[in-house]
Length: 143
Image (cartoon, rainbow, N blue to C red):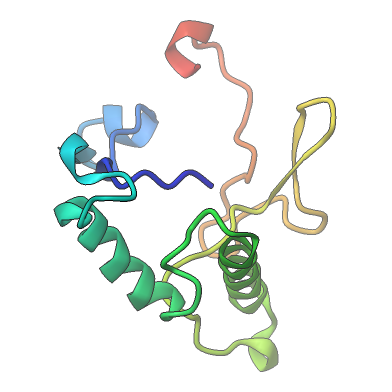
């Protein structure tokens, strides 16, 4: 988890088949930069205020003041994992999600290989593969 109240990027600018096909997804990202509003003697600035409002909306007010703390990291991971469990549960296990935070269903092995979580090779809503599929694109386009 990286938290930086100096810069924020909102949206996504993915390069993928859906974006490049021209008739489906449109990708856009916007950034804001406030280098003079960080540090212990700063009031925070608009980037900090934006992060705080999002975190309070999606995580509640607990531990959001110190994002680097183990308590906050545990809170974020716990909510994301619980939301994934609810999202993928059978109908009787579903419940409302807390905010819109969800873990990406992968496990990164010690050797760096990425694998889907056991039993979750496909996204439950659209059926796409969690770890993607091999392609013939040059590496410099996908790295």
